[in-house]
Length: 237
Image (tube, rainbow, N blue to C red; front, side, top):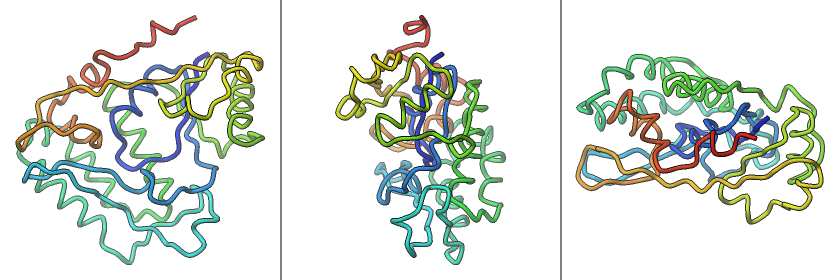
């Protein structure tokens, strides 16, 4: 069984969905320490002037450096939902497939979310369904994985009965390959080749949120994000 995992991310980039599509199961890694200035509460979209910029969900910062992702609350005293949706409308309203997805996406900006993790989880399920990626999703919080760093991942693989684990590309800098093999788990390191696709507003910009691909390319989005990259059949054992 092929497993992969990732911390909660707001409006994820294409590479996360490629990694999930390679797996038989995905673990939403929500019970580890929160990392500020990461992608958990922000991501980039393309603006009408041809630049990219952040959409950031404000969070309550009191003691947040000592909290897990599960504990992080959104700062709803800031009208971030109205601002985010208005920004998306202004910059993608003329995209070919904006009308196809806008109604469903807009509903996330009409809910008064208390926890960042819940927003990210529900958005992830929406994007997976929209991309027709039918990989089962489990939440770390529903298990009792033990250990730190590599040991935590190998214990997750043991409990979820995985014999292949897909790391992101940066995993090669910290994963102990020999330890994984000794535990009966084959580590694979993703090396995502970002596609170039039709995009509004001047020159192409890569590494944006998945919404950029969906609004510009619609039903072809999954095929595009997988193009020229490792496919699941390449790693089936």
